[in-house]
Length: 441
Image (cartoon, rainbow, N blue to C red; front, side, top):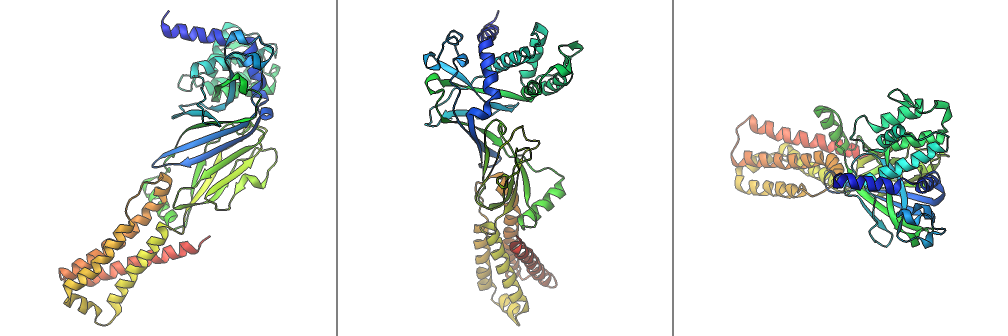
């Protein structure tokens, strides 16, 4: 037997214990009793990177049966346990959790169990739950339970197996129980562990039974907007002009596994949060499930008796300040300069006759406008809406630069007039759209 196989066998033996399976089932079924509050705080970072910071205000159950070491599970009190205890933090969606980190409230790193150990714990918990329903656990059913609790990368997909098993009580022609024999609570647990994995940590035994905050954080990727090239381009332009908002789905971590669930979103610079809303499924629909205040940090909360039927959604809109204000000023200056040059009697002739001085004067404006478009490191959410505004500012800059070039190079008619009118008209159109967008709610 290889070293990897020996480690797997030792792990299974360590958690193949009715005590820890029973204690885990009690802890998971009673999450709302000892998890007082869960908070997901979502922080968009540079580019497509983001961070979910999940905090759990809880009183971990002081149950010696949750001892990590099998020899300590017979202790009568948790303060007699030597070594850490296993605390289930939540059932989270299956898939890689990149940059996963867990800490105590004082910043002390908190050990997290690996995939193999979490699978063993899930199997022990499911086995005990089924045994309470009078269902014997044979080797075939144990293999199915291990398949259900396993990673999403295996085939068949564990969620599909769990759904079929919970509904029919059979898998691949082998009947384990009649569908009506299973309590809905146990059936839902089978489904939950097929679609999510049990995230568990090791907590010092002397901290069990003490109210505290446990913190978990992991990477969140900002998914690109979906749609065809021209559809996305038009949507981006409308969003930058404040004629449309961008809707984003936000992750929710174990929303129903606490007495109260809270979600916060840190709005990136250059954007406003026009709406943050939690999905339905709460015990009571309350005003706290919706935040339309426009504050830089949007906050919603609810209490869920069951996992919500959807996910949280946020609407982001380009802010009136910042780059939008710069774009409005740039188009106003460009349109004003061009229409004065076109409409004032003798203005164009005077500019052409003093070509060198006029070129230096007009070129100063593009230099200033280009400075406003200087790239900066920002979230992909902000870049998606602000990109067209940078293009508008750059277009105004290049338009004035082209006009200055036509003066220095003495561009012949009718091309000179066509160029001047094109720049003036384009700047005026964008100015009109920006002004209309700014007066919209």
